[in-house]
Length: 230
Image (cartoon, rainbow, N blue to C red; front, side, top):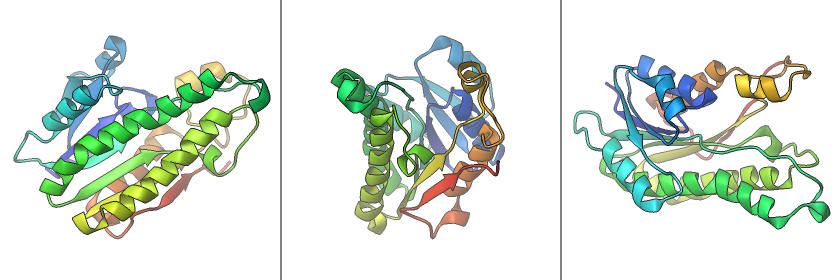
């Protein structure tokens, strides 16, 4: 067993693919959940532990990190921050500030709290990897998504800060920047879109698993584009 990976958002369309990929590669995987229907998507899988946790609550996040680090035979060595969301709206001068703040909270707070709670355990284990989910929109913005674009750009800044702060502790921190992910939810919300450039959850999961593993041991502070070829 490689160790334990803590995967937030691990019950979602992308998260389920990441969880299964890591399990297939021999990781013990801990996944926090809040939605009963999505929880059932993953249960039962060998090597998987599901922990009920509100990832906006620091105490519950800390408890989740402790559960992830509880197996001495498989210390916590990887954190994958997938929780987030997308929102469209009017241009900035026409948009309510509440929606802007909602996007910042959704795409930053769980990533910050989970990383913060997990880092002491990663240090205790001798180092490890943190992977954060940004977006192609952070480098190629489009109209009507100022909150989303800003929050996903901030994820890149957070990745850079963590990579600098914890380099000496052997913790690598990288960001993955996908284009549109080919999930049932995105297909339903964009039924007429050309899906040639969409990326499957399984392809993104391969990249994330690589960044969690020892083969990527010299990579930190990277912004990895996963845009597809269409």
